[in-house]
Image (tube, rainbow, N blue to C red; front, top):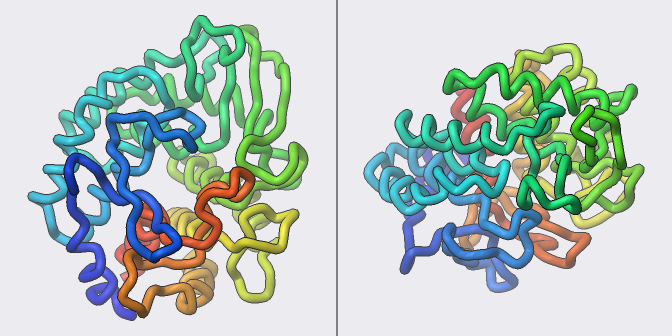
Length: 314
């Protein structure tokens, strides 16, 4: 399918009774979530995907509809409870992005870590970080908070990025920066590599200008792909697949200037495109297999990064 054809699939995305598309269910239709109400399955306890709806609408030229999504998300911009403010607002209008960025830096600890979730004075959460925070930092790099973004990366880079270029998903650091634990939340095992987390790492490092580290992570991702080019949800597993991880990685590869490698990922994603009458654009994504949620579905972030990659490559 061409980019215009795929954008046409994104144009009907809309708010429905204060809820937004998230992932598709067994019936192939979008499951809808309010961005203002708790999500039981999310690590942060709050929906983190609404910004990718607005982002798709902007790519499709539906700017009024995107602004309506921004308005729905706006109360979250001053809710300092999660690192996911980047995902929610990096495609938003400038004033809203700046409000969200000011809120996000309030989660920074003495170590430099921007705590993923939980109250900052809760000892069970203090210092917890996940690799997903690295792409969320894009909100800070683009709004004048470079120092906070760099402090987080410097504190967590060698903690989460292994020497071979693979990544841990999660870690916890003390206020002095010492490592208290490493492991995973969404991956298959503490020492495995969660595919979407690896893709988040490439994207976050590329966007931060950490080129050597981004390329190391990218090479590991590409070297460990199966023959069909679509990663399993965790590189230690066989199934289910997570096409969204390939779409995120393809977008990041273009930021690194690796156009041939990005194109190969796009070619591999071609069989995953939705040619039926169900919702979504990119099928065969996985949300949280470890929790048994979204084992073979479309996702709004997978759709966004596919469209974003195609737009960059055009």
